[in-house]
Length: 212
Image (tube, helix red, strand yellow):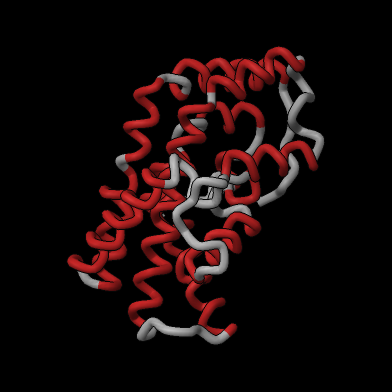
């Protein structure tokens, strides 16, 4: 799909209003956070076994909580040079761990953000999206950390070669993208492209990803 998108001031305004109406509630944080146990856990269980998958997701949740909500932040419990920390950093640089941020940057690069909104309105949307962004980071960091640890266990643990490290990072990346999905413009099908079709299918990409 194209990185470019046709613009319509009316469709953009309605899309932004829909975003604020449905996605800015604190309940969105709880609802979105359920995606990990409902979608990711069965996939990891099928690959690594239900016991190990549940154990590592639980351990990742504990570490995320102790890290005060950011496994890559200053309060992270993950050692700076640990394999887990390096995997998370690798995925962050790929844009996998914070898709709302990477998507915003992509829109800015393509001249889309700001084409039909003022700076004040953009700020309102940013504040309104805090809960969605926090739940997204929560989901993606948990999935990436749990998968990295599971993949390391599968490989016997210990010191990893550069090839093994990349394989662990790729496995974590794949698990994150296939269960938390890619919501970028370039990953949208032709049916959902265009200003009015984008509006109509605004909240359907999760459903389409689940069916894919």
